[in-house]
Length: 361
Image (cartoon, helix red, strand yellow):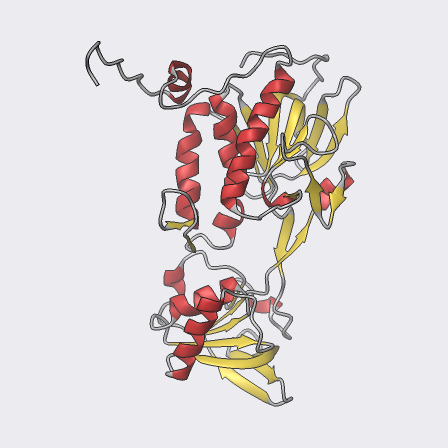
């Protein structure tokens, strides 16, 4: 889509029609939806690689609710999305966080990042997932000393943990998923949770209890207390049970899945209407309280909101049409189908199939 800024260019700032904040699955699919409409995107992410939580926290975790993909690994999904966006040559600006967003007099926006990169853009799409996030720490004495070597908050490669003695803390889906995954693959698996109630899927909890009943894994209700071993030597973890008894668990690796501590970070200071750490949007355009700024994926909220990747994909499609309307307010954006539209085929870089001759097909 050919368009120009309504206001004067700002010296030193990258000129853009749209800037996407967040390169998780929804931000990547947003590139694709904008590209179908002929809109070139810049995309910013605080991580050094695209993929968001899918790549950073659970790259090998299976996802079962992506349409037409009965099972898809989280990193595999990111790889597929990146391949899908290739025809549109989005410009990535990774390893930097958007620290400032200012609305200019002509209703365009000036963004500044932690690396002092500036963008002058006509529209902004926030696809920041949970915002900036950090895993909740183990909270055991000396645990910080061994983070990344023996204490882990994510699994980048399951192969690193096979044939190891594992202690897994947590009661949510991640803790249960990895407990089930490593049962029979690790030398031993002990799941530690502070209470009998779980936040994980009931089917996963039932499978875990069956494994514990047969002795395939061990399950203990307790809290982390301290790391075993002297000086730089890791020996395992000491836990404190609900009855006050202390037990030492010798192990090779500790994995803690207490969830993320989400923070909107600088986004909270951008003057947008926010409800419970989520950005309020409408359901026609997924526009925020500031015209020209949109929000998709887990970072937004509206009546009936479901935090699912597939919901974020739907939001990205409608947000793309809304951005197109802002960039060319006098031009109606027609809905075209990728199966039949020559314009879509050109943008995708695929050949248009010949029309069947009269009497054929």
